[in-house]
Length: 358
Image 1 (cartoon, rainbow, N blue to C red):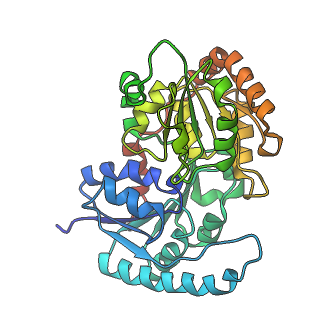
Image 2: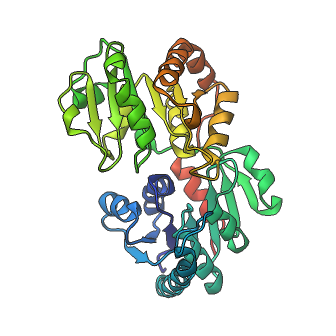
């Protein structure tokens, strides 16, 4: 009997790759031949290649979907068209039973090519409102899974299901002692984890570093600053450890954290929720995005899981004030978090996707 095959796609940021990373072991365990389509320049090539060197990776052309004027808006449609043809050739060669898309710009030509090839596509939307790539992909999709119940009102009822969050199992196996040891920290002082996403955040990095002397009086600080954003002048500072980016160490570092300051990408905030980590969210501003992180953050605040500080209101003083509020609400937040439903496992998610195969 011929081995069943699936193609995964998604990229541009770690948030568009993390769910795929989580479900690949489950798909392999089920006996599926897994292939991945991404962009040559995107972070997905590195992340998938490092974690799953035996999973074939195909890099294709893709354009960026912009909401602002750029001369590239005139050339990128041709890049997308080239990507569609590249993806179509890959699909015809691999012959998958289903394609799963986590979104991001690179997923658009893959989803279009899948429709041309007659292959069912399942897409996943993790924000409160669908992103632009998924909006374009929606007419070509067989089914859409969401994390937020609120997202369903923006989607066709007949082909949308809310699964809740899906959390990588390795996050639950993190070890606080190992996380502390990796940073040369002690267990006698609380740990603040500050992270701005896989690409880093200048705004969060500056807010932290401007307050560093004051913060170090109270906290030990783990700082995930993004690639190319490390400040060598701060290397070796007692109580402060910076990483440009982490992969296998992340579960240990998250278990070592008592509080978290972060952007408000949905994958990350649901991981914090699953681990019962009180969080201060500083969402990407509406000037720099479509406002999805603001919706995510405000929903988490309303549900009692987070404090929120808008980027436009971020100053040295407001950062410290919001952090003090977070500290004062820590116990209350943890109690609220402990009452939430258990997240879906990657095994459960993989089986849901495979229900829609050809």
